[in-house]
Image (cartoon, rainbow, N blue to C red):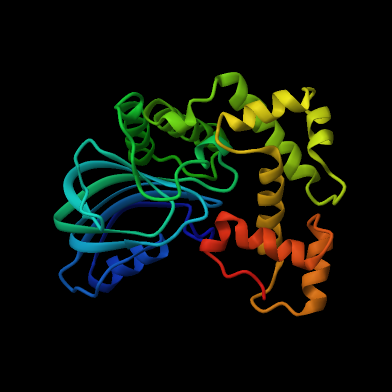
Length: 291
């Protein structure tokens, strides 16, 4: 999700090219259609977004994302590229590119996670997945409705707490509905603490899993077990965070000198190691790695 979107948009009523442009900035392209209508409310904060959107018949081509997007279908229906039909009450988790044919209209809540969202909410399937079960889904939908219907904005002093609540409810929806994320609360807390430590220390090329375990005061075995519970590992997260920071710092066409400089700044011993990590990271789907 772009980080330069307006922090608060409410009671939007758009049509034609304006509606298509708004969807495009949020990662969904649609065919040109002057009859397209859209109504929306949205809050955006540093890559995180919550929105409720209604649009008329179209085909939504969702772009590949570095972090997942959760759709809660409120009304209407759509058909995915593989023929699966989603309708009112369904939840869909998206990371890779996916298209939705909307025959009449589609109303939905969208929760777009950011790189700062809890890791266990970002560690799901890389293809579109229907999230089974209904536990916590209604709670998340109600919280999103209430926040969007009010006057809250990301500039509010209380916003960080509200954002964390939505992120935690999103985690609850995913963990309750999908066996890949069946981590215990203790493991989730340990992973979160570890990720924060990695973000602070990943620029150091000598930073290791052993040192990470010391920082969070657990054994390496316990640390590995916590990350396995979310289908990940400490080593892969260190690489991912370094790759994410390198990708952020690199220009569109970095020369050899710039690539070596960024590699040193982000904890890689060589530019080639940095390029390899970027190619293997989720972000490589959304931004071309340096050559």
